[in-house]
Image 1 (cartoon, rainbow, N blue to C red):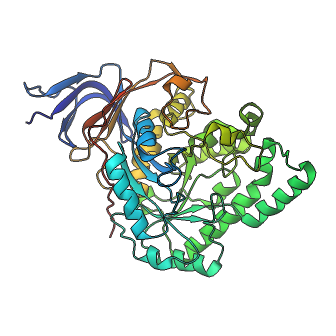
Image 2 (cartoon, rainbow, N blue to C red; image 1 turned 120 degrees about the vertical axis):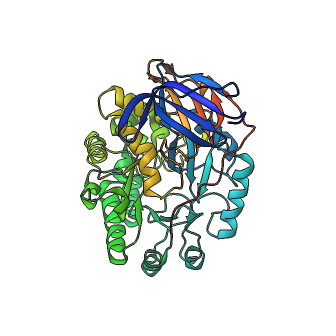
Length: 449
C-alpha cells in the first residue's frame, strides 16, 4: 500500500456488459483491485463513498480537433482537454488538419510534445495523408501512432487525397489503421454550384444536407470499402451520417476480428435537419447532419453492431466565424464536454442500454484501435475512470462551458446527469467542477505487431 492509494466504495460499476455495486482500489496510475461489495480499508488510503453514483471507464473519444498548433484562437490542447475531462473524456485522438498539417512524422512528434506539456487527458494524433507522403505513412510506428487520416472529401483545408494511385498505395501499404472521411468531392462541387446559381451568396443553411448529400457520402464510403476489401486494409469510416452507408458494413464478426469499422458521432444521433432552422450555421458540420430517418438508422446501426463506436468530431470555431453566410461559415461544432451527458440522456429516454453506451464509448474504441490497458475497468489497467450522478441535472450555459470558443449547440439543454469526478491515470483531474492540472495525460500506446 502507498500514500497514493484511493478506494472508491459503493459505486454502481458499469463495465463489460454488467452493472453491480462494488469497489475499486487505485494504486498510483493503475487499478489494483476490483470487487463486488467491499474492499478492505487501510489508514493510508483515501476513501471515496460513491453511493448512488455510476462508475464508468473513462470515455475514449477517437475523433477530435483541438486546433493546436496554428489555429489556437479556436481551441488548444490545454483548453479542450480541460473541457474533455470535465465531460468524463480521459483519452482522445486528434486530427491532422492543424497548421501546419500533420503530414510528416516529425510534425506528429512535435504535437506529441505539445500534448505532453499541456494535455490533461491521454492523447494520440493521426498522421494526415496527402497525395505525396506515402513514405511517411509506411514508416509510422503501429505501437505509438493511432492511425492515418485520409480525407476523401476536402472537408478541411487542402488535405484532399484525390489520386487513385495514391489511395491504392495507402490502402495497400499502411501499417496503421486508415481512418477515412468519406464524401465525394465532385458531387459536392456540382451541388454547390447549383445552389449558388439559385440563391447567390444567401444559400440557406438548410441546404447543407442537400449540397453534402447522402449520395456523396455513400459513393465515397463505397470506394473506401472496395479498396479495403481489395487490400485487406484495416479501415475505419469516421462520422457516418447516412442510412445508406450502413449496407456497406457487416455485423457478423466480433469487433476484434473486423477489418472494416465505423463510428457515429453525438450530433448525428441527437440532431436532424429539422434543427437547422433553430441553430443555423452552428449546426453546420461535415458530413452534414441529415434526416430524422438517417438519425434513427444510425442508432439502429449502433444497436445491431454495424456501427462500432461513438465519437464527437469535436471541432470548435469562434461564434463570429460561425455567424458568416453559408459558404463562409466554417464547418464543425464543439462537443467533447457534453457527449457523455447527451448519451446518458439517450439512455434515460430508453434509446439504448447503459451497458451499450459504455461499450460504444469506452470498450469498443479500445478494441477498435487496439489501445493498450485502457477502456475497461480491469486490474492492471490505467485508472481512467468517471463518476456520474444519474439523478442530478444541469443546464448548459455559457458560464459552465469550458470550450475556448465559449459556446455550444447544447446551450439551454438540461441534462439529467452530472459528471462528478474524472480520474486520468489515477489522478483526480476533475472534481465537482474544479480541475487539478498538476498532472498531465500520457501518450496512448497500442497493442499491435
